[in-house]
Image (cartoon, rainbow, N blue to C red; front, top):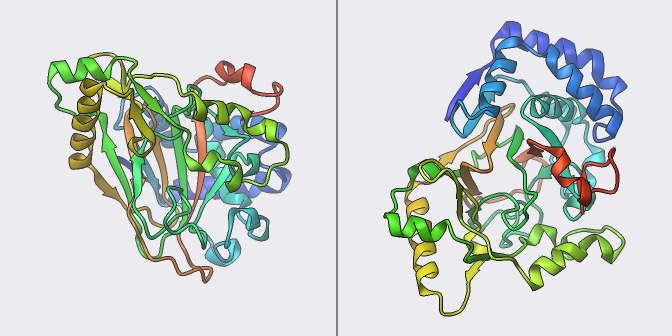
Amino acid sequence: MDILSIDAAELRVIEKLLDECVDELEDVESDSALRRITVLAHELPTRIRAALNDYRLERTAALFVISGYIVDQDRVGPTPKHWRHRAEADTRREEVLLAMVSSLVGDPFGWSTQQDGRLIHDVIPIQGHEHEQLGSSSETLLTWHTEDAFHPLRGDFLSFLCLRNPYAAATTIGYVDALRLPDATRAVLFEDRFHILPDNSHLPKHNSTDGAEVFSTVEEMHRSPDRVAVLFGDPDQPYMRADPYFMSVDEGDAEARDALGEFTEQIDKAMFDLCLADGDIAFLDNFRLVHGRKPFQARYDGTDRWIKRINITHDLRKSRASRPGLANRLIR
């Protein structure tokens, strides 16, 4: 993990930039705001821009954290009881900042099938989701995974901005570099012999979006998942794509099943904890690491863990056929 700690002078530059632009960016997720934010990001301190450029080019660790931003807890208000209620909070300043730093790594995008098509997600515990395999769960282990592993257009990176984490709930992290697999096992993992189903966050029951057509692609992927490889890219420095809770192999393919088991066991042993603090901004390389979350006891009293999250792609053009228009960042 690499960490950049913002100093007092850099924080003043960031605060001044936000002071000057937040009011004009009323809808942070609009096309015009995102294009404006991408330009404004180049006014952030040079050291931050240089570090994020190195991260984008894989010159640093797959996990990169920027610390030192200060969240005004009184302004942002209580943690919402549900992501649908986020309009009651004043977090536009943090959303603009997260979109700015994210744009230095790639292009923010979202899914029509997640959080009613919001591009900036709120990761909070939701009452009734305690034991679900969802970011809104709390009392169960959120199994480690590649974000949106089932989808060929999944993000290259994720960015998180922690608004609060009073009980130090831990995000779990595992690196592909930690794998020490026999050549035969590695060869199997490079073959298209594994199925990954859509995770529960993309299901209609966890959204309120009108129109069944929004979920038609995800439902087809659920009915008939393609065979995919777990490892891909450079054989000596591979990328990975995995979500063990939602994975399977063809019946009778014991070799693939055993390879997946060995892969999972090694990642399990190499996982470590990341406890984000208020104001921390974390970038996760969705090709070079997996992430999950340890159980915690939610309070549901307005003080719970609250994280803003953005999916980032290196190449927005590759999803053009799956987006309604050039100005639309949502994949359907």
